[in-house]
Image (cartoon, rainbow, N blue to C red; front, side):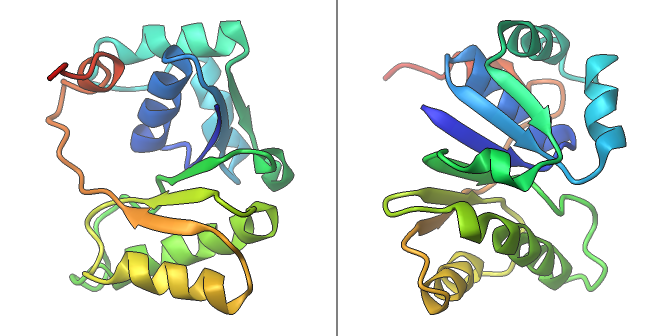
Length: 165
């Protein structure tokens, strides 16, 4: 499946590398070319498996970092991994605004049945607000929010090999 990940920070790189390792075609979108260039020299991380997963994704061609928003066209799932810094207002509204900005950039490339997955630590109702923004613009995509819960140093292991039930 073709997947886009918006945000070349720690969380975005983790998601992109794990999705590529699982066999998906991943477009990692970040507007800052310096963030993407840093990937090629290896990420600074406390996740021991991430550098290897990232290298495998890049070498295989399943992970493609870019600053070009049009590269997300054709992806069916869009993961928003932006705005992970500490909220400036204490309530997460700054993170919500960052998500809306990222969504505005994706909207022209979303199609019927596409899924947009937002990040955690935002005010309650953020996914509904983002869905309403898309609906108001006539964009036929679904929005979901996923809570964060990754322990430091454990990234890459659980997502690359999820528990079987």
